[in-house]
Amino acid sequence: MTRVIEPATEQAATEQAADDAGYPMRRWVFEDSLGRFDIDLGDSHVQCGSMSQLHVPVDLELNYGVDRGSPDLVELVADRYLGSADRVVVTHGAQEALFLLYSTLLRPGDRVVAFRPGWQQAWDVPRRMGCDVRVLDLTEDFSIDLEALEAAAGPELRLITLNTPSNPTGRRIRHREFEALCAVAERCDAYIVLDEEYVLDLAASPALRGDRFVSVSSLSKMYGFPGLRVGWMYGPPDVVSACAEFKHLTSISNSVLTESLAVDVLQRWQEWARQYHRLTDEGLHILTEWAARYPQALRLVPPEGTPFAWLHLTTGGSSLSFARQVLDTGVLIMPAETLGSVRGVRLAFAREPQILREGLSRIGRVLEAAPMGSAAA
Image (cartoon, rainbow, N blue to C red; front, side, top):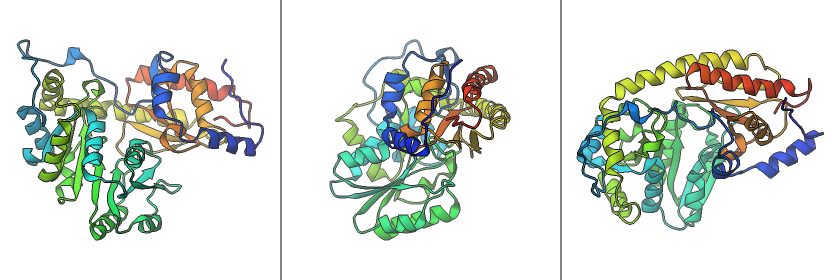
């Protein structure tokens, strides 16, 4: 049975957490974990779909396609916002959309505000571009520290990146926080980039609020088709047009094959929405019951519309070392260190029940192998 090996003292635990902080997600997923798990509870998307569920015309011509995306796909994306096609650019996943926005909107010396725990790209790419990046730590309850936000604002502020519901916390920004953030952006004449990967109803996106907002999303998280690598941005026509021009210097266009499959997905979006709700409703029930068995080891943060949840590890120790021991059982989870935090894990629960139960059972065996009263993380 796998046993949790913990630092002997709180000081040692603190030192270990400091050593592991900022551990690259790329290394965890594509190096340390590659080929070592058969149950994936680490990726933040709903359980993946398969080609057998999709349809593609057998006579599809495999040409270069269109830099902004095929007209059919662009219209379908615009429909999700109840908006217009001239505000859409289809990209190679949401990550390319974000990269294009950073490359188009930012210049060396511009100030960027991002929030942690979160997605490393939000602070790493602007920093590599020579921007003055202010990464604000969320409060203990994962709220935005509004005083810290005000202190980070200034005449150089160009961009605020916001992910809501948040990866990895699962928390939605509160109205008061959002209005304060908007007031800062308006005063500083800054853009707000909205990472809305975990939003099904994009018709309520703040991107419809004005030309200082840009929404980014994809088919990866809520629809369960990350392998299609189809994402998009929705925003002011001048911004998305500039991004389309820059895209021509990177990937030129998306694959017409995956765009054709994406059209099939969005034409049947209600079907995938029902699938999402089925898996998240049942999965959250299973996870909540399981977490209640280990009150001295972890605390579940109730998710607010995400296919994953954050688990605070409450008895000390490194969450990265815990994730490594869970990986030894063949289960992938996402340690806090890969997301700019410590003492927690992100765990996806939008899986078929038998898969989720087996994965949680293995994690439970790791927790139970720890000596009573010692750190279970």
